[in-house]
Length: 241
Image (cartoon, rainbow, N blue to C red; front, side, top):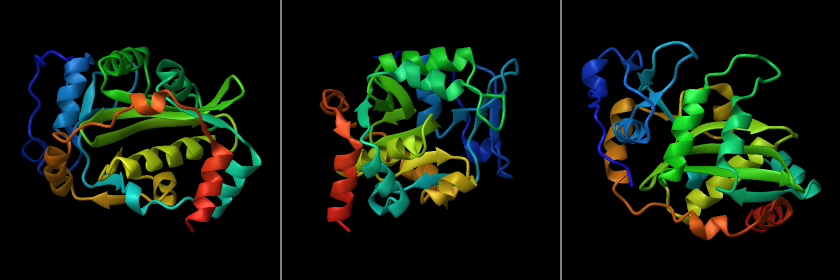
């Protein structure tokens, strides 16, 4: 249960008619604030120590689960290493793993305030995680926000080859099973495009958003009780080709 937010976010096209993406600065990272932001097409993105910045980019990067096809390389990798995949069992571990420095940079936008805000949003039932395990070791995963049928991806990490892609593929399968129209990827980059993402105009995204967030949400509990096998998922992918 989330209480009403004490903040009112501006309409993105009115606040940013030129499409620069930055909508407003300030507020906090309480669950009610995050919920209010996502339902209005905004998300936080800022460097640690800076004021909180709220963004709604033009265009918006999304991926359609129904159109997603895993690469043959990924399917082979999933068959070679039989990893275990779970949902919502280690949300805080996943977000903290996403916050760790990468091999190409020591900087991260996932500050302790971000961690705490999204952990509380998860406890309220509006965030999710996908975890990839090798025995008892967390080796990859992703996390995001879920409101109605709106699925918003935030960040992913990988400690073994392709494990973030395995988590992403699993999310696509959940999206397909639950008729999720799109997964919001926020900002365009080459990695997301390589996974099959594309762009929507901000206007089209915001219009779709209002229809999506009022639909019945994904029932994550039905997945949380299960452990999936990457090898079995890969075999099923080959059968459906």
